Length: 383
Image (cartoon, helix red, strand yellow):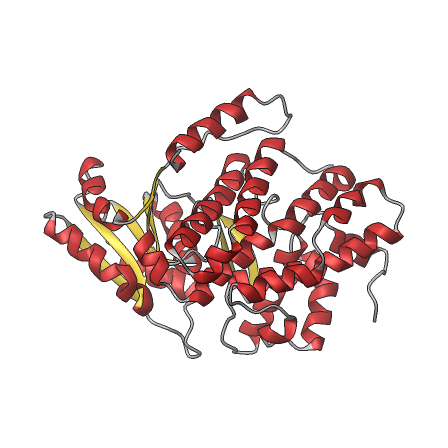
């Protein structure tokens, strides 16, 4: 069953659900296969997009952007290429400066925008397309994040990470040859982002029970099945094989669809993401080169796992029973190391002071009830 057929079934299941949570009907076209880039031009013609904009950086241009632009021009269409330059520390980040670069690069006559890259380029494009009322197409160059399908854009504004309303893509073209050729560190980051679902799903149960926050059994199951697929295929993902990146890419897309379906990120983003955001903000403030999002998320989830298991053992709170099912931190670090990513806070280059600050302030970044928030409210964190 391909992803388009799977989405149809998920839509039917969500609409038939008796849950109080409303579900959005997900409508997007997805190709995850060898040669998916070759389908882009015909899709543009089918949609009657004669003039489009392609957003890339120097790395994603070499990975796919140059080839996609050639396919589009060979089909007799017009494509404007916006190549985002790196900042002083060699990063492209989703902040006000880069938002303006994309805004200025999309001509009035451009009918759609292609995001060729991974998380940052997608966040910039989806936000600009929301503001300009343009459709956007996703062309992932690495299986590195689960945000390809997202309708929200996490942006750095005035040094703080905030999520803004944006638009999801109307189509995704994930070419397995491109994904297989991506650096293993990118694939490891995607695995880390998925591994973070262990703590995010547990936190979602807690937020439902203690915070009276919205919950969807359908979205929970979609995300959990995607997570389990990654763990079951960790050897292939670690090898960077085509089978491995296909499993990982489909899992990342499924996780994104679960968020899109319920219009929030709770199944995929809990305390581990809040810690990641806090570390990212600190690195930007210090002018340091960024660490991949999924790498931070995976390490933060491994860190929280034993903390949450201990919380369940020591606190007589019914909602915390879900934390007992988490893998040990040791097991999670072993998986992270196996796929070739960082597995400890020290591997990320995070100091003890930064970690302490993240553990004590990260829960304030989102209005969500998590185990991390509970530990801070009840002063359970060790000095």
